[in-house]
Image (cartoon, rainbow, N blue to C red; front, top):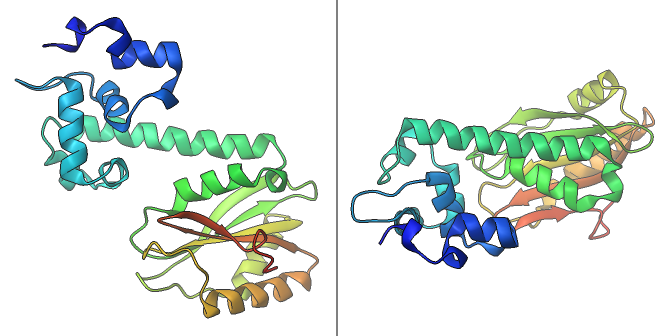
Length: 224
């Protein structure tokens, strides 16, 4: 039976319009993106099969082009559409931060950094530069490393913060392992950067670690 033959209250698009996107399952949201199914399968059936094959919605969204296109009913056109949607969501989050006080909205910061850093297969260290009212000036990925770590140079962090005319920074890096708990090296690096930036009157407001479980905030755990 085609989705158009379903009762209106059960159709994903109609349910989204009536109840909002948050009311839909992963499969229903993916079905709206897919728009059509394949022979013998509705878009919802296809979406369920894809989620099963990839293991999760996140794994599907993070797949590279070659892996993505191996999925039933998928191809380069769908991949480019998906990448455009993901990039629009990142830019939306960035604009949300720029409109407001970043430090008073830690959840916005968390969502933005997760969207930016979580799916890298290697470690990336980045900074959010803020003005004296804690509004976002810029976001910059400064160092890239391997699966296990990235070399971070305090002098370069200070240099780039001064170039951005920042009054404060939020440090961030990802853990490709998925574990968000800070290591002893993470704690030591945070202290070194805090001291180096303090010499030029730039405050470190937080250090986020992004991983499988979301984001770990040094400030929230009293580590700054």
